[in-house]
Structure formats: C-alpha cells, structure tokens
Length: 284
Image (cartoon, rainbow, N blue to C red):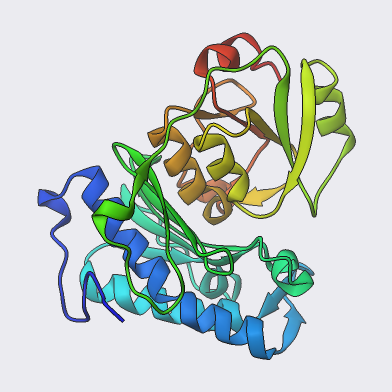
C-alpha cells in the first residue's frame, strides 16, 4: 500500500497551500479505510453513547489510525475527534485545529448501504480551509482546499495518483432544484423550508456525501435543521466551499467552527451550490 505521507513524516503547514493541506488530510482519511472496512465486512460490536447515538468498533479503530497519523505529521496542531470528545476529552479549540469524524453515517454503516464516510478537516479562524471526505465502501474520495477534486480510491490501494483526480465545481441552479435530504433524519422545519423552493427532485443521501454531491454539480441544496456536530460537517463544508458553494447558517453567514461555548454543536444550516441562488433564498 503506497502511503503519500509515511509515518514519521512531519508536514510543514506553514509552507503548504490549502490544496496541499487537503491532500495531507485525505491521506490520513484513506489510511483509515482498511480499519473501517474490516469491521464492515466481518462485523463488530455496536453500542450506544451517552446521547443515544450508535457507535461501532470501526469508529474507534478509524479514529486511532487518523489521530496517530495526524499527530505524527503535525504534532503542534490540536486534534478534536468525535469519539475521544464523546468519551470526555476536552475539545482543544484554538485558532487552528483539526476536526476528525472517523465514521460519519454510523446508521448507514449499520444498515450496510455503503453511504458512510471518513471526514478530516482543518479549521483556521473559524473556517474550514481544507478537508477530505472518504467513502471507503464506494471507493470514492473528495478533497478540497483552494480547489475541489474527486477520484476513485479503493481500500488497500493507497493514495490515488494526481492524474486520477478530477476537478469538480458546483453548477448554476436550474429552474427546478435537486434537493438532498438525510436518509436518517427528517423534520417539519425542513419540509416548511422546502415548500418555499422550486423543488424538482428530492434525493436521499447519507452522511457528508450530501455536500460532495452538491460540490460535483449533481444537486443544488441540502437543508439541515436538526442537530449536527462540527466534525459532522467540516470536511464536507470545505469540499463544497472549494467547489464554489456555500454553507450558510440561519443568519445567512458562512457556518462557523470552533464554537466552544456551544460544545461544537451546529445550529441550522443550508448547503448551497449556486451562491447567487443562496443569497436570494437564504431566509431560514
């Protein structure tokens, strides 16, 4: 298995572009693919956290792989990861920190539909400046920094070579919008919001794949009124922003990160492909 950043390699963030940072983060996400797929294919324990949400052995194994790799590569940058934070570790919010969701879409993982992802992002001054979303069961990787890309990335084959990457961009909104909704979550606020839009088609997608589908120009809007955590959204948000889209909160401002006072809990947001459409329809 070819590793882009082998163990012991220290990554020079201060000298790197946002695209280079995204590649570094993507390499960590891809490295966790085998740990996740081993549990997916052979089974493992599933239990509930204190908030009632499910967690699996894959979550824990993937987080260990990613955090160890990030800590070796950038030892001075704090890492906030879902499982360690949920277990009581204090979230080290700073001007610059890393956010890790080792298995986004645990319900999709348990349902065995393949729509789960591994998410890694860098936050600077409250914004996701680089991120990677890896869907190991689908063999697809999205990364975003200054630009956004997608590529095939099969588990166990290492990091995909540069010539395999395809640049992606959001599309201009059509007259009838394609809306993405969570397969695992739904609420009356979402329905009321969508009732005000020219919706032509609704699709269900799990995990942070929704951000990536919009980034590829295959859909237009993803509203989310139910609770999410910052690690759920940061990597997909980074990919979508790099592709020309926007993720806006209830005030119409870009979704902010590092909300320590809210324990990294997101409020309502809408992910848009077409920024012009977003400006005209941002009232939540």
